[in-house]
Length: 202
Image (cartoon, rainbow, N blue to C red; front, side, top):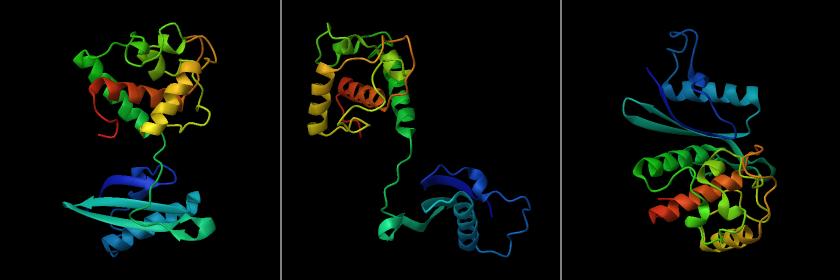
């Protein structure tokens, strides 16, 4: 039986090799369900993963499996409705959106963000470019104080973000240093959504 890895959702990123086997015939006696459970439990034990959920696609059918606890302190088990943080995969999606905007001519890498965001062009933040946000050289912090690290798109958080940006001081002159910034990418996503007149979650 051939398995295709579809959607890994764990507390750490699972590689497709979790389900690889050095001996193709060694698992022939196991059912697909038993094989998936066996390999995942081995993986979780080896890497001390406390909770996981996976989906596997085989011959057009999707099977889902859940393991362990989502909140070990409360003994809350993982379910198919458990939300997992997927690390910085949103930055990949945001980068794709930026590329689409560039190809469509809706923005340019060297365009200052004050043309989209209602921030005075005299402010240092207003002079930041899309390229500086996307390449972690903006001078914005890793996370903004008292704001969700992903610059959540709710109206309340957008207002808080705008208030923060109007008063923000950059940590260094843009382009002179590199500092990984969740907040810069959250801002970039909001800017692209505003240009497209669509919510970021669409």
